[in-house]
Length: 424
Image 1 (cartoon, rainbow, N blue to C red):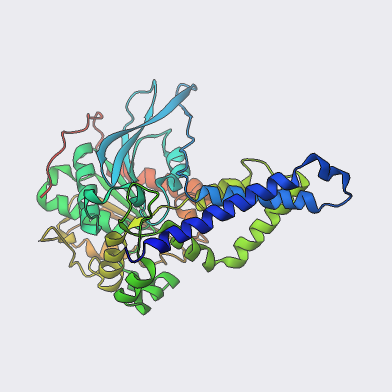
Image 2 (cartoon, rainbow, N blue to C red):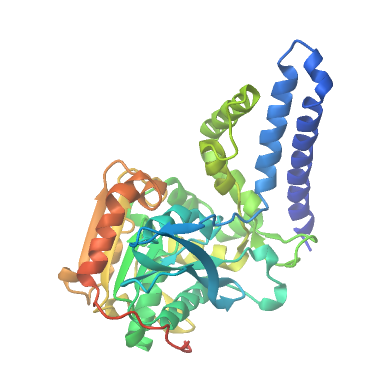
């Protein structure tokens, strides 16, 4: 119970700021304020509107908001989502396009479990839906998972990925974005030994820390400076009384968000100040650029403490993936066992999260893979977000990834998902 009050205190601060915003918005919007020849009340109402919206978003899971996609027949086809495999810490979901036959490309998008919901990949999904059947890993917020469900660390995460790939079958193309890249590589190597027939045809790794020591960033510097004891002391708390997962040890989303925003405090401060002025002038809208970005950016989720701590210790500090020394359930994984899966690496020239070179290390580890099945792309001028969801992804990277899939995929009729196989 040591950290329980701290978690609830953070939630109390968030709730209080949301309430203050709602109060200021209501007070500044009273009709009687129009009698006073001053813009102060409009600014107060605008500040309250931005404040209320911002702090309310921090505990809300965003909707996918993908209602339809245009098919080859020129018609809009309704898009729905449903879980294909349900697990306590995350589901495998499919974006079902109604009235459209199976597509030749079947893609599994592996979303990060790094503080934001899988909806961070919304634009990535939208860009792939016209040409692919899209599946995605939808990780759950740890505060909503009862303690009785047990732990979830990077070994469990890897086994989840292996199970999802087995379920979908071998006619699959996997795209891992950022944080899951090293564990997706490990899961593929795990299948290469345990169930070779379940391996995907291609694996695309986008901006992931395969070898964090290959290029220094603020993230790697932080991981090198802090000890595991210090990290556990300052970052780990118990979920508060208001959630199903009360008592579970987590790295809280609100704490993560404060870290995210402190890295670019000036930029965020300016963005919110300008938005308040736009609202006061009546120039803002519900889905303007500011709201679209921050509705997603501010929506954070708690990570299981054991997952966060084992990621820092084993991936960043001990470099178990980079040194090919990673083990799952007592079994040492050998990335060199990957011999048939084509692997492509995508990096951004200006990526300050996973700098160029970190993800490229995957190709060095794939010693059993012929050079003809390896590919790499460095996107000029692109930052971290741009390589999977921004202009660089839409204009350059997406076409390259689809070409890579087509060049290395076996053109077969789309099969139904295979029965779930048990991983050891």
